[in-house]
Length: 170
Image 1 (spheres, one colour):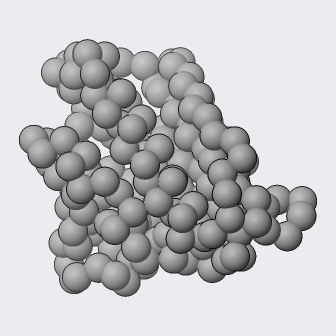
Image 2 (cartoon, helix red, strand yellow):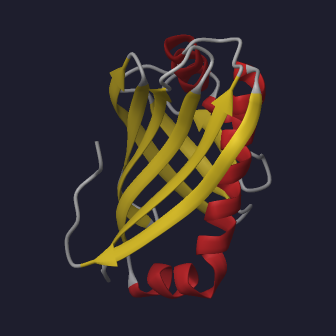
């Protein structure tokens, strides 16, 4: 219900001690540890995590009040994608990516969500503040992954686009 929303969060690193592929693998396996527990607490539905691999289903307690489930639908050398399952407040996907920089030790960590609200209530909650909590969740997650990769943050940002239809970026 409502518009299709694309939100992108990114953080640029320089001097990273882990390479892009190592960072992506670490992020995937340790996603529950990188997310701030008060905002998004993850646990495995089918088995303990880690490991997190393709078809792993995760249960999420969001903001200590809402529950949702996702499945890891795609895993690649530089990232992974989670797709929401029934009864999640949003219907869509979230991509977690590591984009190598032009020089060794430089990379961009990026989270991109493409979703619609599940219901009128979920859309209203999103407009009244859930979007801010969601932004904070992913910003803290990116910073945690950056600490694991080493180096220092040189740039970060957020972008939101709402439209009747939009595609993921490359």
